[in-house]
Length: 471
Image 1 (cartoon, rainbow, N blue to C red):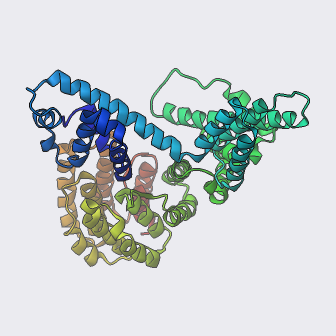
Image 2 (cartoon, rainbow, N blue to C red):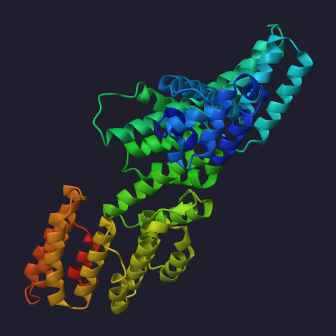
């Protein structure tokens, strides 16, 4: 049963959900009226980490003792158990959603005309709304359902409150719709940059005009996604990024953690794109964003900091000259790296730290400790070694490394062709740089122009520093 839908469903539950489900199937309804369902679920929950003990014959013998093995009978029981387990999980999630539960009670009391009970739940839910710091799209969806229910409860059309309830419901629905539509527009625009698609977002132009001309930008959830869409459609207008960056810094608590992380990574990617295009002023902004991500834990995924973010943070801080900060960061966040990447990520980035500090012997020593088994560490380490040999004027070792690096690029299958080409270009220009006669400035100028006009070069900034005399 290890590959059954039931078993894989149970494996994906959290420990708390597994415990709740186990307690649920211990109820008399299952233990007395449907004992096979309870036995099956309890046994599988106990052996989620030892799937070899969940072989079909073993499970069947436990659930139907004394009967000959019947695969169809076991499959039918597993399908029924999955249905019950799904319903139990859905019920648990509904109960944990305080808005949903209260709204269901409001509807029950409204339909039965239980006025005092209705007013009690209504007041309680309104207090929850007022206390809730989050103001995301779902908040306004629930707000709409709340005011719409209040309107339906007020049957007398002459009551003055009814107009207020309708207006509140309408406003909440507008905020939910506009913020959701803008968020989907941002997703569609982003996807179209990666995959060509014939699909178009309907009414986007009218929607953007409506948001700009109305009162809607006073709602942070609308303003955030509006500025994301505008940043995507007008990437060269810095006003949109500045507005989004300010909104995120001041209003991110009004989004769920998942939504805040989504906006956060959009800001990071925007800054990275600008930096890669040569706009180094965005280094300060991306470094500030990295610090926000560390302080709010938005950069942590399952209590781990990805080695790629670890490296990007170090690189940005080093380029800004924040050397002492980098040294502290490397050691402070080493334990947050995934165990299998921890040694390589720490050692490589520490070597990069010493490279920026021009302690080249220490760089060579550390690079000997980096494992080249993982392709991207192999790339980074070889590139750093290449630059270190150049800085030390170790031209014989450098020539040998260029040859072995090129052979490795030809052999590896894990890099895309465009990515391989960026490193081939690096090797090509380093070799030309070695051979460059200093007494002929016209050749130096020609090489500088060639590098600037070649868009895809790994470590292009470092190359330009060498030829322009800023290394």
